Length: 187
Image 1 (cartoon, rainbow, N blue to C red):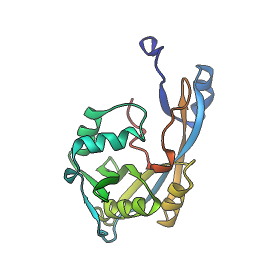
Image 2: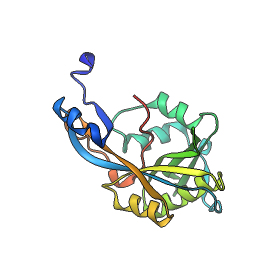
Image 3: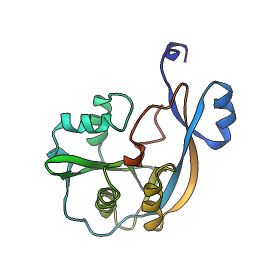
Image 4: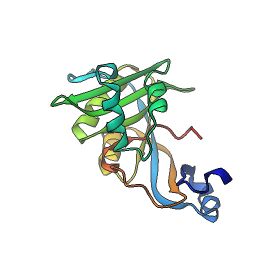
């Protein structure tokens, strides 16, 4: 951790560890909720494979939502085995993207980034349509009510929550476009 002293470190910690992180200088930004549901449904129109989006455009879009450039991560994330990456294009511009990937139990959706609730709904429906009858998981920021409503509209149930914390100030990002975080399990 010493080599990161000059950097703003972000983490998603389990609620029970919140006091520990706070003692070490981390500040609470908000909570995330992990939802569980069941895949299936119909693939909506207007959703395309992410390969139809120029990679540079994807990086620009992601930069408005995530506080650091992460081209190598994005490339690996959208191309991972047993994963599907989809996008919505409106007016010839990227308006949202999402990934569903196999995990130990079921499939996780993340990220799910979208300009509007309607776009998030279409992406979510498209992603879950690829895994009928299987468990799906979505990690939503509680500070985006539209994300919480999306999960609840699909009869998903909360399994647990995490605390999003930073070692410095909270970065200025578009939280209203975050319907599902990429993952809690890296770091």
